[in-house]
Image 1: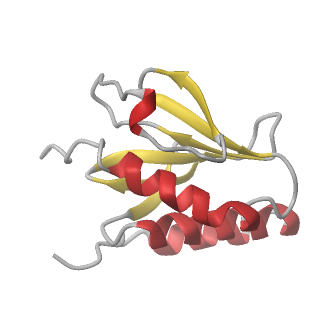
Image 2 (image 1 turned 135 degrees about the horizontal axis):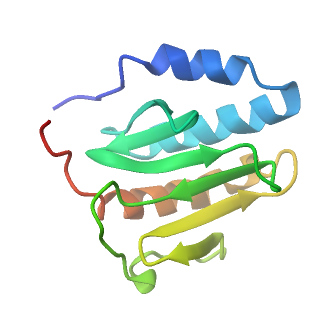
Length: 136
């Protein structure tokens, strides 16, 4: 099974192209880091933001909060939980929001580039906990 990128990938690029320049650069860096983490990751605009899936959706960018850029990690639509100690986070990037959600906040411009390796490490682990997509 090859690299499964969403056919709507162009719409993610278009969405990002419409963002203000400083934010656009960080969003694009985060997008590239996520997509490079695991071959099976696809993307689309969902919940009015770039969202990523491997089976179910597992990560969505938040661009309109008090923090300029956040990555919300979740486990799809079915209720489930993830043990906090099952995700190695040596840099302490994860803020747990519940038993099935966590976020990584990027507080300043350029902070994504400094954390690419740590974000990819977390994403690779997180994806292992994401359920396979259920047929419609």
